[in-house]
Length: 465
Image (cartoon, rainbow, N blue to C red):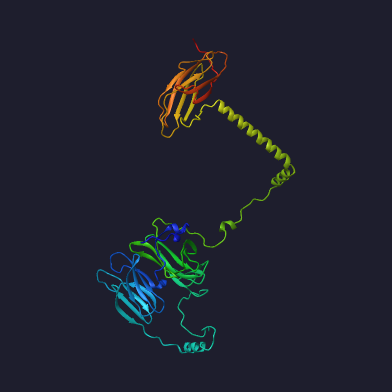
């Protein structure tokens, strides 16, 4: 299939369900849905497109067979085609279908793309009453209503609101009829099930049947250059076309099961392929707000307490607003103080350097006089290690004693946690505590890369010398 031109690519959500396989605006193909069929004419598992082309209405009336995007064969018809079907006419293997074309008063049968047989339809005798009515119609300029004709009525009659455009069967018990701007669903006995209103006049319709998915829908071509897909009365997809669609055919084309073939008013040919991942969700086709918007909420009745509270708020609005602003200012002040305190005594500081991003977490364990101090250092860089670092402690030597007050940090691999342990002993028996400062330094530089303030807990005992 050839690629479609850029201006035909629809950016809507519905178009994402279809692949634009082919578009030929000058195909010079004029036909209706009743004159299109998809059939495996050669028994090779590859369906061809058979079209009864109306041409200009006077000449170039042909039976065309398409394979892929090109014309496989053409046969001249003597009159305008009104219908076309594919059928199996014998039991010989391999079983290849024949094509029957209704053209004028004849039915032409083609086998292997060649004329095989011609049926001549018998002529019907004209009802004398009908002949008289049509004779009277010659004498008037307006359209006569032929209401006096008596004709046998079928067992079940479906009355449509206007001239019918087409009928298709969905499933076993539902018939969908399409009129000028409405879509109706009926049972086989003529009982109306539902009605859907269309945004524009109907030009053609066809059935979309996917037996492999158990899915059926009605395809309706509209005069506003759109093709709507309906499932019951729900619009489930919309396809925009460059021209008004005059015929639709859905089925297996080539080796693709879900192929949509359309011809336009200007003689163009459009081929779309349904994606295997396409999912159609039913949605209401009625315009306007959703139905849920019109459902009233179950609002409880106003109680006396609610009314009294509303009156109190209305009378004291200024005072309540001032109290609210005061409480809000106090909350902001408390949050700012807590943030400053967390910065000054943070146990999880982070380095501000982008070249050496570090994070450290400090944990103090014990009740005293001996405490275990654990530092967890992590390199937060994405891929670059950090090396040549050291840790130094600053504390009051009259209050605390540390076994090791200086460490060399090994190479820090990104993402790994490196724990460093040391022990601190409290030397005072006065029940006081102080801050121990931790500095992460680079060897040969005095400015620390990272600083932490550790609030030591009060010792519950005295260290024994």
